[in-house]
Image (cartoon, protein in one colour):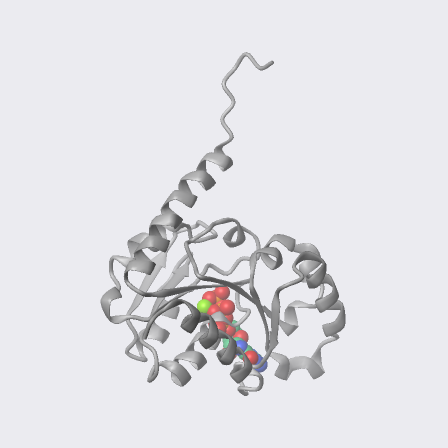
Length: 223
Ligand SMILES: Nc1nc2c(ncn2[C@@H]2O[C@H](COP(=O)(O)OP(=O)(O)OP(=O)(O)O)[C@@H](O)[C@H]2O)c(=O)[nH]1
Ligand SMILES: [Mg+2]
């Protein structure tokens, strides 16, 4: 029996976060919006992939983007150049986005005009996986140069995602990347996960992901 107060701060923080994530879910349902959380390590290719999807999809669906970064507005500038409603969140050090940050960003998006909000999370394979941001789709990018062993080293991220995008497959000739080993290790953690090998540079494999994404979107929102 402890005779002092014990406060598990992580438990408190995550519980508070879950409450705000529920508010985001309700808001997104009321506004008929699909929220997509895209996570990865720094430089895996999130912004490049989002831009490829914007070029392909922004005629058909109205997309807004929330960019998360520790510093800078570089990614928001790239997205905004396509005339897409964009909010840049600067965390100033924090290595993940939480639900309160997303809720604040949503105040600055024209939600009545949007079908989809894409959240580019902070580049980090650990913390973003812990924070529910009220997304309808949890997904991650792994790029070929990072190696095929990442599911063993960062298991939570692979466990919480419905889709794994394996990007930069155009670089496969330069790396010893074993797809079978990756898939075996990923499936041990997450049997259901959908895996999409693709290149945001050449476009190879991107249509398969778009088919999946549009199915996810159309299963939720009325258009
Ligand atoms: N060869 C190749 N390069 C790619 C591909 N996708 C992205 N890149 C390159 O990878 C680098 C990082 O891409 P970004 O899209 O900025 O990565 P990010 O995940 O948004 O990076 P952070 O926001 O800093 O975490 C850039 O030089 C891209 O041109 C791809 O499919 N193939
Ligand atoms: Mg980026």
